[in-house]
Length: 249
Ligand code: FES
Image (tube, rainbow, N blue to C red):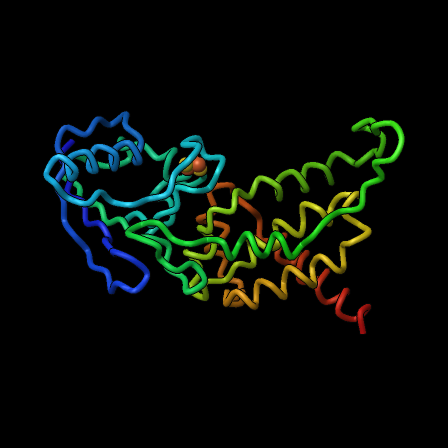
C-alpha cells in the first residue's frame, strides 16, 4: 500500500504546531498502525529528520498509551480497538490519513502526538485507598460472595485502560466516562463500600480541578471507547455524588 500521511508536528508545549505531509510506500496490510508509524520514523531518521514522537507501550490494547486521533476518530475507524490493535488492512491503497494528538486543555501536548495525561493519574490518586483487613491469615479470594451480575459490572468498569479517548472525543472534553468507570469498579463491590462516598466526592472534585468539561449526554465517549465502557457508569457516579453531597451536608 502507498499512503499519504498528514501528521501533526509540534516541537513542544509552547510551539504552535503544524500539519506535515509524508508519503510511505510498501506498507503491508498486516502491519499495525504503530508499525506503520515506526516505518515512517525510520524513513524520517534516514533522511536526517526528527522522528515523530508518539506514546506506546504494550502494543496489545492493555496500557492505553497509544492515544491518537486518526482521520478525526479516537483510535481510528474501527470500534473496540486501540491504535496498536488497528491494522493497515482497515485502509485502502492510495488513502490519505490524518494523524493528530488528543485535543483537550487538560491533556497538553508534550511533543507531536504525545500528550500529558497525568491529570488522570491525579484523579485516581484522589480516590485514595480501600479498607481491607489484612491482619491474621490471608483471606480466601472467595470469602466475600459477590453476585455474578454485580461482579461482571465491576469487571466491565475495571476494563477502562485510561487512554483518554473519551475526553478527546467529547465536545466538552469531559472525563466523566473515565472517572465514572474508576468510581464504579469500587462502588459495585463490597470492598469499595467503606470509602464509597468520600471517594466519589474526591475524584469528582479533582476532575473539576483538572479542567475537564461536564457531560451533556451526547454519548460519543462510549462509542469511541476502545473498551466499550457504558454510559450507565456516569449515571451511577452522578447518583453517588448527589447522595454523598446530601449526606455530607
Ligand atoms: S500500546 Fe498499549 S494499548 Fe496500545
